[in-house]
Image 1: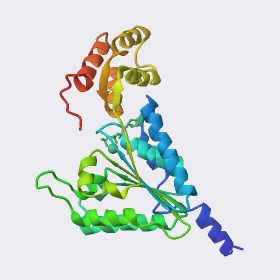
Image 2 (image 1 turned 120 degrees about the horizontal axis):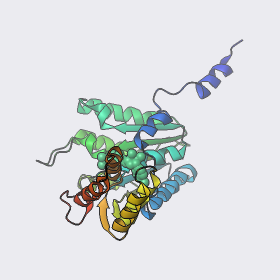
Image 3 (image 1 turned 30 degrees about the horizontal axis):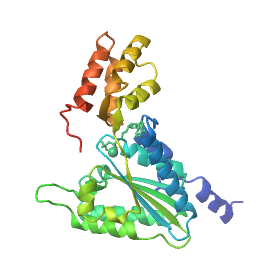
Image 4 (image 1 turned 90 degrees about the horizontal axis):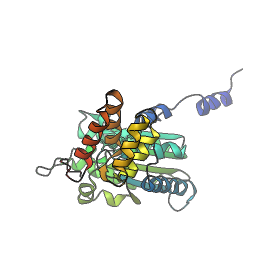
Length: 274
Ligand code: ATP
Ligand code: MG
């Protein structure tokens, strides 16, 4: 005979909540893992651990919010998703403006409100808000943005969960200045800076971690050339360059790889990184 206890057991254990998100979906945002290319990465992860335990343990702060900021392609989204997974909280939600394309301001606000209300129902929740500025439809001309969404986010980031429940909010942005001007960065308990790689050693570390990219001779050449170089490049950009080199199969691929690296992240780089 099936009784209420069985039903409750099923609700607790077998049914994935419609509003929560599975681990696999988070993995999509960490497609290439997290490579520890330098102390900067270790520092970010350590801060993440600290904030997770603060969320769990502290009675005084049932709401902990962190803003992960850094240049484009520096790995912010992957780090936010990684920290969320590290928490192992039962309610995990990844919000991106991509899934709200074409929504009216009101619809966006309602969706965000729903996500946070659902989060408040779980004892331990973690909500990732990726590319925070993109929810605001910010445009530098004017400048223009959705004040309705801005006010909604401010309130949601401030509202502590009901008694006995804990919420960790992890947002990301490449536009820290804008969030500061809009008074949104002040909503966070901690701002964590994610850095680009800044030296050839960092780059070599990544190349070494990804096996079967270059042969021994090529590696020797790379080590000699890169070891003492200053290079400014984001992990996402570097992984793209390595992928291109992997696809090529000729004797010029290392030279090409180094030339592109110089172009993108060398002292005369043409791309101005934000
Ligand atoms: P964008 O500015 O376009 O939003 P981003 O800064 O969010 O880019 P990600 O989308 O997180 O960058 O891309 C980082 C990629 O690098 C992911 O595929 C991730 O798996 C990989 N990666 C490897 N090592 C690291 C690391 N130490 N930190 C972050 N990402 C890493
Ligand atoms: Mg991102």
